[in-house]
Amino acid sequence: MGGETSAIQRVAGKISDDIFSVFKWDRAARADMNWDCCQEAHSKKTHPSDVVFFYIDPYEEEMVYLNTDLKSYAEGTIGKKIVEGALTSLALATECANVSEEWRLKYVHDDSLGYNVRGLLFLYNHDNLYDKDFYENITKKLDHSSINCPPNIKLHLLDPYKISDLINISSDITKLIGSGKLPQPDKFTYYYPDLSLTRIKHPINQATPATIELLTSPYIIIKHEAFSWLRDKNPEGYVVYYNQPGDSVDEFVYFFDMLSTYQILTEGKPIVLRHCYIHPNENAIHHFERAKKKYSTDWLLGEDERLFLKIDFDKTDKIVVEYNLEKIGMEQR
Image (cartoon, rainbow, N blue to C red):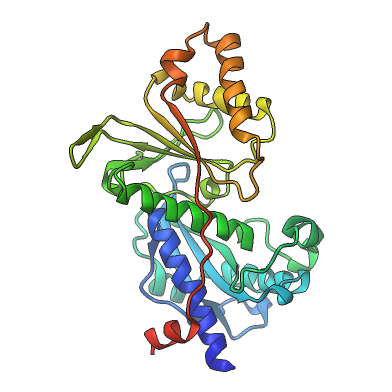
């Protein structure tokens, strides 16, 4: 049983590597280690770090480090108490990591920009059978007072559905690159607008990652350069991962308005919309087409032919990941 549990934990680790490398996250070399607690109030000898990811967030002054707890559970064992316990432990570890010299020496790649440590709970369902409403059954019922996360500490939770989303999106990006519909990663960037209340603090370039906030948002926008594939020459343009159900015309009108605000729609460059919502509305494409006509008539003075003929709409494939536990266990011996 112990060997299987260890292998299951490696499943979560392997998936985190497969996903987050596509999103341009870096990973600290050290993994699955304990380090000494330096806060007497915690009443603990050590804290764990399963894996530590880091990146430059364009909206933050400091480097972001994600002290990550990898959890892998069967469907029947995922519950409120399990999640509360994991978040409580993660909150303590993350608070300590922000002031621990030992943690800094083990994991911080470059402290010239300063750094901020956050907690990330990666909650993977390894039998792919979890089908409950995670928000209604768990997130909504969490007792925040028992988790007792300090106000200056950020915790992020990737639940089984969000992990499934990210597996599908990262897989789709890899597929688009392999089929010549996206260039290699050094030819595309994850898109960040200059917001009215939050300004860009670091230049956006090919190394800029998809931050945890971007990955959990309704839209992930990729801007790519012009590129060649076999005999084809492809112009610069955008790929947008649309993580909304597509329930109404107004939903897509709002989306077009956002693209116009960011001056993406009015550039007239090709836009590939990849519908990646886990349970999309069966009429989403119909709502999308009607929204194009409505938005063009109301806001674009009838310029639908020039702008909207360059927008493609398609659904991403759903990927079911099943790793052989014995094989993964053997890989790391």
